[in-house]
Length: 372
Length: 248
Image (cartoon, rainbow over all chains, first blue to last red):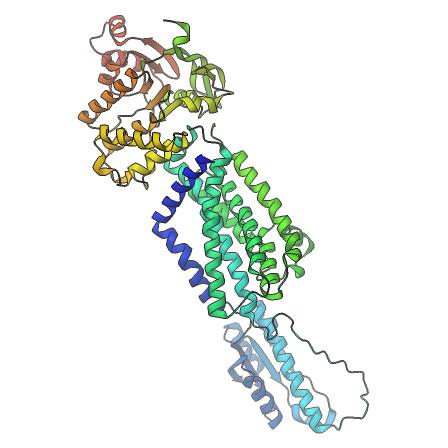
């Protein structure tokens, strides 16, 4: 234990002497948490719409006005023919084409029936599908308005009508920042902890100082602990700064208890740092460690459930996410911060992550070889 | 000399990397308090042999005991009893002189008082009092090497292994460095040293010369010069190393 004290003292001295690490610890969470949620928005706006209006009637004008007034669309073309409008899609100037046929107004009134044509540029998948459905719902709304004016609704509707009214629990106004900030914080802590720990032992290998350590009677698990604890403290600091930013910039106050949050984070960090240290023991250069960490971090983050929902992944991908620590972290963050889950609720998560921590750190100790 | 006087006993110690035999069945003994010179051209297998003796590298075959401990099974015991100074400077450059001494003292389990008195003594002897709070990285090479040696013998090991400790160091500092080696040897520490400087080889009690992984000769400098009909160790080395097939 006394050895550990000397190791920790040395590690902290080195860390705080390195200005770039200190800057990373304090500014990275602030900058990322302030910039990213503002820019990385799930909502799709500024969809470029081109309209081909063959009817040019008051009704078609009204429809176009309604679409533009929704705020999601930007009218980039008002074309005479579909062919002309399609040119805009080809040159990527339009995302959607709405074609209004001749006699749109007449058919709508007389026949009580009309078809519109919407062409979607599916190169940007999210924008296309969301844009298409926004447009669909605006047109549906428009249709309902007209029917109200023209048709006196019968006392009993001919067809059963089910209206769905949704209410959003835990995030009533669907403020995406409330949704994404805890997620970004989760990723941030993971990245800082993972990279710092992965690069550390390998750096000592590169410089050659590890030889001087290996020739001492130091115990392997003490050495690994000496690396683990400082980064654990640093990552906790990053997490705390992140929570403060969430509190004071976005007004996100965890509904659940902070104690639960920190209890989970403490175990989670052991897993992430253990992973970094394990990678570090396998690599000989910082470059190798960096590439390996990038590979895994990309997987962890993209399969972590922040950007895409895990529920909609194929079964095999869901299996992968079970061994992805980031998944558990993001879940717990949302559970505790948004829903107010208690420690008992997140206990299964803590259990899984604790197992990961034990395996990864054990692996790091085993694979750290003082004798080659 | 007496049997139990031997602190290093090597019997056909061998290290293979695939087909390449870095160190080929070397057999020798080193006595307590001796300054043992370990010579050879680049690539002759000196560093590999030394790393095996320090417990940094597992031998492929052969036997060896260091301070009575086996190189296969008791590497951690060995590490308590040796000091090591690698070819590459390996103290922490971003720690100060004091911090490095404190750290390695602590790792070797020295008490706080021991660390304090040792530090005092060491700074005094090296004339580094004024530099105690400077980062080690900012010191000139000669000082770094002297500091590294002092740290390697801080815990008063039975044997200290020095891998080309004076490479790139100026002649005056080299001289001072050898004074430190003599001092250590006088206090009973066995010194196992590799070097490329033949004048330094003359300072050793006994020297061995390795050629292509094999230990070709082992004797005192005087006897070696005599048997090779050479006037200096330089000539002895040339005669042996000329036949070497391996180079850098």
